[in-house]
Amino acid sequence: MNQTSNEALIGVAPEFRRMLNAARMVAPTDAAVLLIGEQGSGKERVAREIHRLSARAGGSFDIVTCAGMAESDLDACLSGQSDGSGGSLFLDEVAELSGSAQARLLNLLASHRAIGRRILSGTTRDLAAEVDRGVFRQDLYYRLNVVPLDLPPLRERVQDIPALLRHFLDNAATLHGLKSPTLAAGAERLLRRYSWPGNVRELANLCERLAILFPGTLLMPENLPLEIRRGDRLTGGDVPLRLPPSGINLKELEVDLIRQAIGLAGGNKSRAARLLGLSRDTLLYRMRKYLINA
Image (cartoon, rainbow, N blue to C red; front, side, top):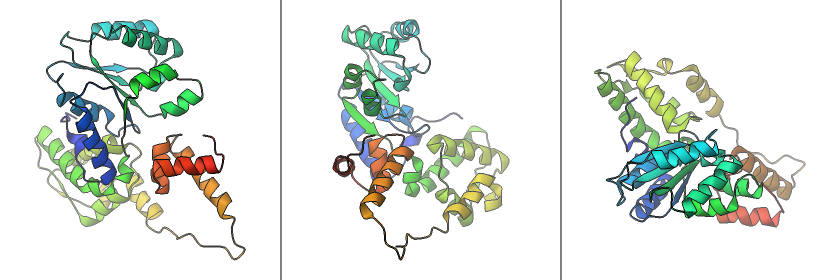
């Protein structure tokens, strides 16, 4: 799908707006930015927005895919992708770099051999946790993590789904020369309840499929994929937590929930805090209080 540069930047959800406002504040500077978020959450789109609003907007926006990259390949990418105009370089999935490639990148950045380009990085993993585990260099982490931006997953931006649906359906219909479909209330309700493991990218792909298969029609629940229809039954009847007659150990419950949240968030403390409805500082305080290492 031919996507526009700002399509992942639609939304009014508070977490999303705070992230986007911070991105636009840091854009005019030359600070390194680390974009943290799940696959499909829009890290590249935010990086492009930062480049667009920067003094380097007239230069190129180059992407280096770090997964599986050898030290020699990294050297070639850094020296060979720029057009010499001092643009921006987006290191996609920077946590996937091998130890030798990390050392090489650090050396290139320290010696300014990245041709004076601004460095923007993206990762699905918690780099601070990777540093603690000894698999990511601490010195490189500090160079890349000058301004961290945490992108919320789509399941935490439910109020943004209707506007994104309309945007993607209209874009796909225009792209393929079709009339855009509309959504019945029941279908939109199912789409709002779905967990969107593929985030904004999954939503965009679904909208393109629906625009092609059902041009100009009213989309009903039965027109949606099975996993989305099944998701309604799985999430629609949540049972409130009840205190058992035997009582509970509140401390043990809190520790268990914190551990579960950290596991679900893949070690990302900011994401775990959101799952628990806490601030990151509050979560870190409780982890220290209960001696939780993660």
